[in-house]
Length: 338
Image 1 (cartoon, rainbow, N blue to C red):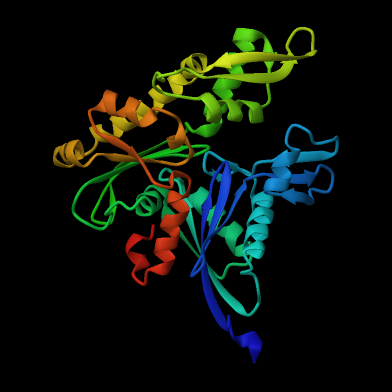
Image 2: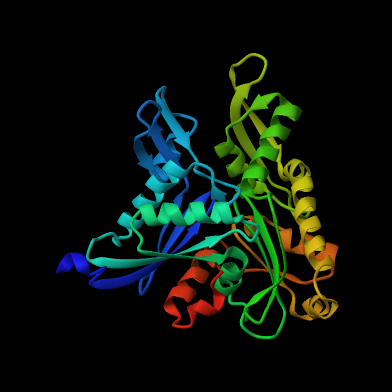
């Protein structure tokens, strides 16, 4: 009798399956999880040893025989098997995995995702225990989570700078008027800092150190008082450990081409946007979301370059997952389905 019942209880979760972090929203409970998209696996057996925060702690320090994998690349699945382990871990940790529960999973996917990539995302979620899997485009989810009136006729603009991609979109009437997904995000920022430090000082630093530099002193606009930060790494010639102080002016220069790439993506999106919609943005402004939105002065930099007022969302890191939450809490969520 029970075998004929697909699920006695019904629940739903929303997932921001990001390149850098996975955030999970459970219906009726809100955001309950935010962990790095890292998986530590046994190199021989491919068995997962640690996932999320525990796996990230092992990055750059993992002993021989343990491989640290980031199954998401540029917002899409790069390693099908490992991503399945990761999804199963988050679904179970959220307490939503049971044969008595009919589970719907809403996953945010990049605007530029291909049908094959989207199918891979869905298949991973099904294999991880979901009975129903739906996708929503990240720009729509992010705009909803940022509180923009996506379903109304007024034009809105969202620029969500994630770990692997930046999603740029102009929206109206529940849909996307014009959009671009560019492969520039927090990971690329970190690589730019790593490359700069090696070129300027002959010092090799870990990506984790570059991330700390970015968060502590990164900026897109000159600061009233420039900052400095001591970094530690390995001398590229002697191989010996060494410390070096770097300042925010240097970091800004190292990241300039990344900011210019985002600006170019915004410009190209506006070029394909209807003139009336583009004009409305001069009054309504645009919203920055994602981890990249937290970089000092980025909103001011983009405002100066475009003439459009840019504002940082109240919870930039949670915009996408909060958007999936609005979808699953809303009885009319089909309006915004991909």
